[in-house]
Image (cartoon, rainbow, N blue to C red):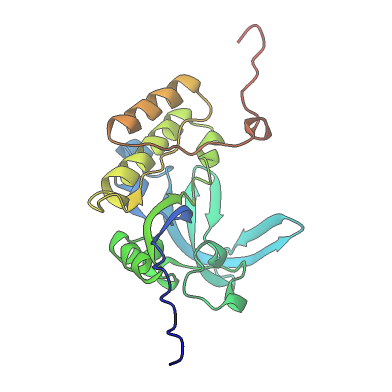
Length: 224
């Protein structure tokens, strides 16, 4: 008799600790005080006049009224204009189409930003649990470090973390793992936010591997 084919071992589901999430429109608009809704983060759909990534530099230009361009969803916050790109929401696209080009939320796979659909995508990908880094706040919250209004920035950090715990990860039985950000510009605020996250079950936090590259810690002269 021919030898029986050996039975292959069962591969356990993956625990992914380097995923990403595209924040839905309501993350900040649903949580910020009324006085900050206009200048706080909000999604605006407008055309993109140009977009490129050359020599490590990401360049883009929002189209003005009446100008031609490609429809794109943009985050507006204070004077910041930050477009969504297909590279940040590449799931479902063929490899050759994963490029630095404008994208809207409607063009993305829903699992990029919807909890139920993300869990379904994880099932397809043999993923048991996922820890997702932010997109608009950048990997450790640099977007809010760079904002002029630090009261707004503090509220934005807390709003993101509330969404992360209360909406993105809630009710998933630990499959979506909370990954909060902190107030990089203020050690006391950051420590308090770490404690606030820990009190509701958080066991991780986004942080820069080389803070001096972000100008941290801040250096103040003797007069403050």
